[in-house]
Length: 344
Image: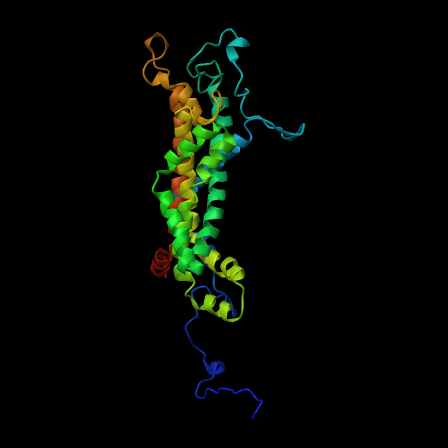
């Protein structure tokens, strides 16, 4: 028996003799064949989306303003000394300045007016972003992380494992998410981590179902079968080959869900079940001044007490929706192909 490996010889074609040929792809550079990754193409498309970039700018401004609203001290050491907000969010101004009254309208010294307790609304809205925005991001990171692993395991193994795991998801879907969050907050009480827990415990189900559907199609690809044939462990195949290719639709849902969580937190705050009363969280601020929606002191309606907190919620949620639509368009392979063909 010969120990030499078989070799295939192709005659009639010599690549070195070909002087004119089409490029292998639209992304070849110089003499090297370099294919532009999907993420780089998506980032370029995302930057060309004006509405998405406006959304990024709005979210960045609101997030930075919340971070820099008041100094941050950890263990007595200031790690953020900047204070964009002129007052502490809990400072009652008429105790310091007799000229300040409850529900004073917007002025140069108080651009967004005074609330029902004599506190500066501008300072409270800037500071309140720390609660509303951070809860949205923390909840989505936790739910997306767990839901991704859950859905990947369910779709990859299939069979009775998939059946049991998906029935759990169906059970969670039988109840409205906000109602489940309401029950948890009612039992545990209001607070930052109570709200995070309320929206995290069941919020992962949508990510689990989404990722499971993506995995069912991805695991049939040749590169996954090749990795399994070479003896790769299931954990390596899931983390290295399957989950990275299921990320694009996950990013779209996650970006949209950040705004959904912020609205949910504001809804619980408006019902008086979110943060403790007096906290500078946007929904809780609306709850404290909701009587102004009907009639304020002396028959006047101090619109600023509700308009500005509501506007902060609206701007952030709208910006996140614009970012989500931009990510969806940027990572849409069919749209990207049509754009490339149109630009060629």
